[in-house]
Amino acid sequence: MIRLNTYCVLCSIFIFFSCSGEEGPINRDYPIIGIWNLIEIRGANGETKNILQCADKEQWIFNTNRTYTIASYTESNGQNCAIASQSSGQWKYEKEQYAIKQMSTSTLSQQGTFNQILGFEILEVIFLEENRLMRITQNNKQYFFSKKVIN
Figure 1 (cartoon, helix red, strand yellow):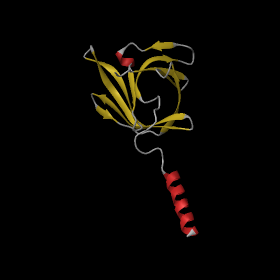
Figure 2 (cartoon, rainbow, N blue to C red):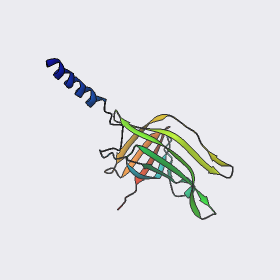
Figure 3 (cartoon, one colour):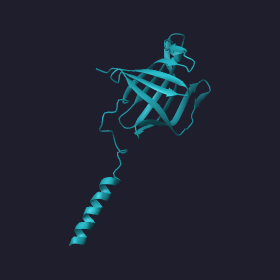
């Protein structure tokens, strides 16, 4: 009887610790989840570029199912702002760091669609102003995003 109880306890512990938090939608609220619009880029030499033109526009969407989409834009027909390329993949948060894994990139052009697959990349992400601004540092540049408020 003692062996059976010990076996049951060990099985319960094994099942508890083998369950990964990486499966299924996220139950916790991560500040990265939402729609983010690129508003500014700061270079290593101190230069600042405010994102005003359609061709500079980017939108990053982080979903609760640990997927993301990044859309870059271009002017279409001289007036309309249209998606020029789109990347998608998975994101994760572990050891107090965010990482993204780019699964595919699609560049729309007259020649067709170009796709590529990349691996996980650690991002230095800092949230500012009560999680309304996000700063990503990558390749000696800082990218500032504003979170889109959805009513």
